[in-house]
Structures are given as structure tokens and as C-alpha cells.
Length: 183
Image (cartoon, rainbow, N blue to C red; front, side, top):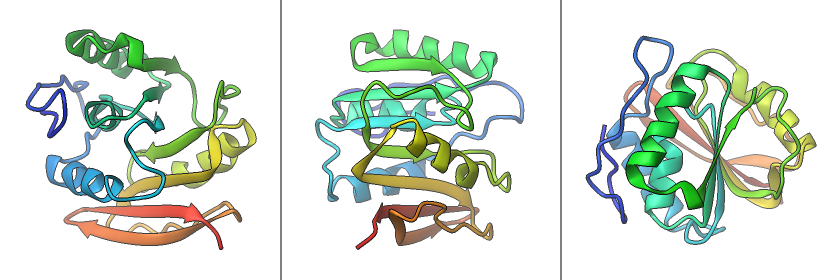
């Protein structure tokens, strides 16, 4: 798995072994970041949270493309070790925070994030459960954009009254759901 664009373009990332972590496909990641590059808030300089971080590919791609700071949240030890190795390999410790935490019971956020990327296991329903917990702990800025990756046929509705589905894109087995502040 390689980072697609930005200052770390072409750098190879490690992924956790086994079937419990499913990294976002390169094509989906490229499409996601092309969309984020033209949105509001801007990716450049943004505070980004990669929830259910797995390999850290989404958060590290955001950092590579100009995010100001990325927090990578993962609860399991094996993926955390892989993410830590990827951060060291890229030499981007200063721009990242690696947090061992359960997204359903997150700690208080030090600062709200502008962009949140959630890629839980498909068909788990965990994103809909995590979003209210993240909001309650201050992770979601009022102007934030939230992207949830789910299986193509998996139902998803926004569990947050403040955020509505603004767009959805399907890429093979994956679907990206974009949430934006409700009008």
C-alpha cells in the first residue's frame, strides 16, 4: 500500500496482518482525497482525525496532502504498532498524535477536528455508534466534514442532527458517505 500524493507520495506503508483490518483501496483513497481537496473546510492546514485507523493510511494520506495535524485513533494493539511504525518511517511524529482509544468511548478531544475520517469494519454499524460519542467528547468542530466508509450496500444514516448526508459515492465494494453541517 502506497501513499498516493503529496510530500510522502509513493512511500510504502505497512498494513496489519490478518483479516481484522481492511485498508481502504488506493482507488477509493485517491477519489476521497480528490473530493476533500476541493471542499470546505480545506484539507490544507486542517486538523484531521482518522478514526478506526487500522494502518493509518487515511490519516497519513491527509498529512501527506497538507493537513496541519492528524490524530489516529485505534483501539487494538497490533494495528497501533503498525501505525507507529508507519509514522516513524515517514518521520512525521511532529504532525501526528497516535491515540489508543475505543471510538465508542473516546477521550475528551484536545481540540475539535475539521475533518473526520471513519473507516470501521464493514457491516458493523460502528460509525453510527461512534459519531455521537465523538461529538459528545468534542472531536467534531461545528463546521466539520465527516467521511464514513461503509460497504456498498450497507445502510447508513447520519446519527447526528447537526450533520446531514451531503454526498455519497460508490467504488466497487465500498461507499463513501460525506456528512456536512445541516442547513
